[in-house]
Structure formats: C-alpha cells, structure tokens
Image 1 (cartoon, helix red, strand yellow):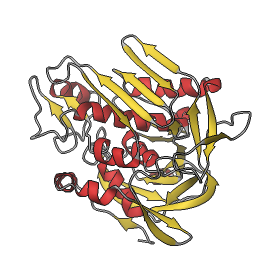
Image 2 (spheres, helix red, strand yellow):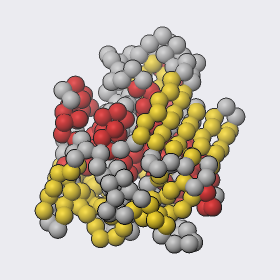
Image 3 (cartoon, rainbow, N blue to C red):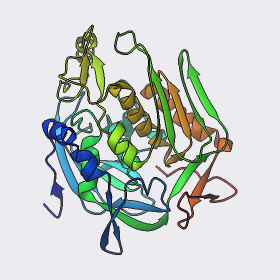
Length: 352
C-alpha cells in the first residue's frame, strides 16, 4: 500500500477502548519524531509548542458519511511546513480544499467546505482532533465528499493521529493570540473570545428536552484534556427530527452506532459516555470550527446555544477584526510559553 497503514476502527472497537480506559492510557502521550528518532512526550506538555508538525507516516481508515450514508476511505498524508490542513478529493482528480473560513460552504447540521468543483462535508470532528493534537500540516485525502462519521466522536481520529505519529518541522508555529474581546450574537445565541494565556472553552446549551434544559462546561484545552474529556463525546440528535432530516437527504448514515439519539423522555442508546456528553460534543464542534481561522488560538472562547453557523460566522468576524488579536510565535525555552509578536503588521492567515 505504498507505505500507507490502514487502521481498522469500528464504532464497537472505539467503545471497547473507551470502556477499558485504553484511550486515556494509550493516547495521552503523543509520538514525535526528532531528527529521525521517536520520542514519547508526557501528556499535556505540548499544548503550546514552538514549531510546526506534520504526521510521521500515512494512515487510512474507512467508514460511512453521516449525511450521505456512503462508504468513504480517508487517508492522512504528511506534507511540508506552511501547507496547513488541506482536504484532497482523490475521486475528483486531486482537487484540494484548504481548511479555511474562506472556503466555508453549507452549514446544515455539519460544517462543509468547497473550492472550485470540490466539496467536503462534516469536517469539524477531524479538524478538532488535528488542531488540538498539534497537526499543523496534513493532506486529508478522501474518495467521497464527506469525512466518515466513525462513532460520532473524535476518538477514532485521535487514535489515527496516534498511529501516524508526529514529525517536527523546522518552521515556527504561529498562534492567534486574542488582545481584546470579540463577540457575536444572533437572537439568543451568542459567542465571544476573550484574552487568556491559554486556550479555554466555556460552552452552555439549552434545548426543549428534559435532559437538556441547561448544561454548561468549562475546560482548558490541552492534548490530555481533549483526549480524556472531549474527544469521546458523540454527536447527538432528536428522534423526532430524523424523518425530516432524511427527507432533506441528511442523516442517511446515522444510527445508534454513530450518534446519541434522544427520544421524548430519554436516550435511546444504552448509555452515555459522560453525564454531560451533549455539551462536551458542542465544545468538540466549536474547536473544529474555530480551527478554520488558520491558526491555533490562545484565548477564552465562550458560547451559548451555538452551532456550526454561529461558529463559522464568528470565525469570519474574528479574522475581520484584526486589531483584536496578533499572530505570535512561542519561545522554545519557556515551560509556560511567553509569546512574542511575529511582526508589527499582522500577516494574513494561511493562504488558500
């Protein structure tokens, strides 16, 4: 397979891994390659790192699209510094779609990107895992238009990155550090980003359902906290909406194997992974959507009743309000990194 490793990850396998805490034990350390030598770094130590990374080797997995219901193969492939995260449609002759706000397309129940003749849907879970685990540059090759849903969480993608390993590159990693608050409101939905010395998310949700009247969670996002507390949280939906979605050509691949489904009074799945799994998944989505600004963020994200449309609109507004943030690099000598401005004028995010 030309050096590419195929990783078999079924929803049942992910469930067994999570039940036995293997995800925590095996994935709370991330492999890095320094000058050809693999080192294992302690969990959480590279939440902010000084250089860019790609993956060490190509890996692949297969699954179905949540909305299309079609079988799809996804491959992660190494690439050079400065490339960013790019989706490549192998079935369309290699059309590439950079993961940037400029390429945001449809935002109905997932985040989709498009460029030229190419489209890729349901990118948020994968992006959330890549940006949090420090994968700055990677080609995501697909043979269909939708990222596989796997078990509905980001756990499979964390496992995939673990199998690929990380390779240190020579270019500095740049961060978007918030200098003053930026906010956006649409009716009773709101989102804001505040200055902070690290990346933190506070999210609250409220639905007309007995299990979801109000739920909130705050988390400092590191590799370790993401792997343990956010990555396993699955997407969710309401049974009463399933038929409506399918009439619109959505959720055709949805099942109890890849989503938490709520009936009128409770959860149809056997069990939840966390008591507040729903709001944890919203944090997962927000991290993935915010990755579309093109830089990892240093700031405190606060959202209430958000969704993909609000997340994407906020990412666009954040880039437009360039006086509210600076692009910075990190000193490699600091344990709690100090940030230094790259230049007096803020450069544009990664190019399309």
